[in-house]
Image (tube, rainbow, N blue to C red):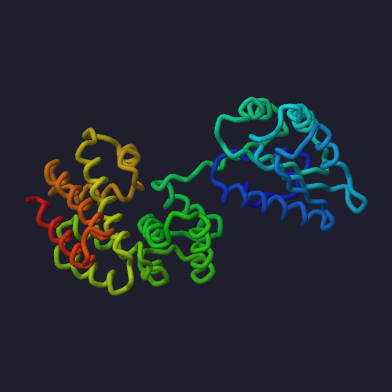
Length: 326
């Protein structure tokens, strides 16, 4: 319910459950916008659940002097005092037609009894705002494009995640920028690189991919460009560690797994499975174990054990390329 109408929320109770604050807040803003569009004089209330007492629901949902329409946001429902549970259940059982009530629960076991009661009521609509796992981020990006009428290739969505990072707000902002400039055009990696190719995270992944694929000259060139572009050395060792872990998991995974199951096993988006599979062909368990140790040593080196981070990273790239197949 990212773009609800007033009819979707008035006389209803929207229950937001999960730890992803950005998704919850975006839905809250959409509800507020819908109710304001219906009644510009709507009375808005946004309160933490811990401050409520048994009589608070009556006060929050009563008509004001200027409008009978109310939009009430109650946050951190897990902290609601036990003596206020009945008031919430009573209102949710027979909600007022001119009131939009949003209940926000941050996840976890606390308050689960109240949640279970609310879920059984016809007027309660639950929307889960669980944390988005790293392997799900390209899918989140693709969904953001679809919601705005645009499109993006899977590889380009993953590249955008690598370039921008894992913050949902930053990713949504990047999608806004791309759709604003490209409209409904389905974007590939080239278009995304035009805007975000200079990001440090993207450069670090380019170094790691080249090294673990055994492309020695390209890896050294990517490393030089990354360092000259100001990419923090720790991002490069982090990207190398990610590649090493994915290959190790692939080598240890049961044969014959479906690609979707294998993606979950590796902790990567489905399209990345092909890349991991290609990289792993010249690796064995002993070699990838040595590569993991080499990455750990390089990471310790750039964090203070050695004085020349550039030399440490160059040695890591050469070591990884030598271990591959060797």
